[in-house]
Length: 515
Ligand code: UN1
Image (cartoon, rainbow, N blue to C red; front, top):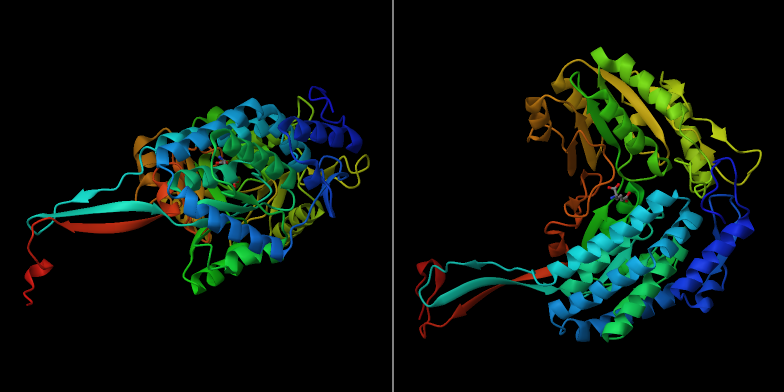
């Protein structure tokens, strides 16, 4: 499979994609035994089968949880900076095998090369952050109200962290969770999406090698290649104090009550339905480039993808014309071709959802300005390439309330900033958001308490492509979780508030007298 074919309409054969995936898996050292079994891995590039993997049933998930729980007893005793050395080694191996892992990501989920490399880089970046974090698991001290007392908090690991990841970031999202969980002292059981298993085998093989290299205890990271039934075990098992899950709102609705019912913790990163406001003062060159990447990049399959564009009426025609023009010129085709910017949808279900959303938009009075059609269907009947669609909507009461995981950008006009913010916030999800403006006061209003209600709010930057240094996650139906940078590590830890009395006398707080 050549990675420098210039024409996005030139497709490698399924056999060539399979060979390239196998080469990369071998280079990483993935156990061939894991690549035998009933689970067929399809490449979205052609729709053909490129590999098989083992399938882990509920019993194997139970066993993995048990092994991770045992390993926790040893791992929690390892000093945090020494735990950091494992993550440092993993980061080195990810760097060494960056191109191999990216090749697997491209073959398995269809990301263009630059985005596949960027995804592995995101894993390397969070490993760097976590290594530093391993020396900074700060607890605070507080002035005690009692003489001769010391009041302080300590952060301890939780135990086994269950990680459920989606197909669209098959390397980075696991790394966000795992690097922090490991330095905090937790052990991990990872259930990747069915369409992400090869990437998961690649990433976890490197982690296991790192663990051997630094002499970490056996069993601290368990990969389970399970379906939903197996994943449900992670959700239900009281030996898993934290489940970190990335996926749809439907997934969140299914698992959150189960985890809450056993008083476990859930870290949820669910659907985004992200909006951007284009104000009259916006630099339109900058805005359009950012909008096009955010809406059409990754074929619209990021949770941070831009799906709603709210444009001031005075620049509406100009913005629509320029985005439409850019959409029209986007090369759609094989992600292995150097010129391609838009690769395939993950599968036929994603295509059906894209078509259903467009039909619904039309029924609600929407007008497709450009795009929305399937391409390359004659050459590749089992692969689903679609033109990014720009759709003018009369209001956002219907289809715009839902996240459709495909490149569809709905456009609405606005007249006042208040109206724009109200439209922006008028959906159930709250992940990422943006405003394009050169008016500083307007930008500040968007970021203020009465502005964007999302977990991520950007000025003159699109909704996608967040750096790992900040906390990542969103509000409302997005689930409220925060992963990645800032103090997100605390989600993987339990806090003990400790009071030490060195006064030699019994003193009760609040001035209470007793005995
Ligand atoms: C996701 O789509 O689940 O901000 C994660 C971004 C990436 C991560 C996306 N850094 O677009």
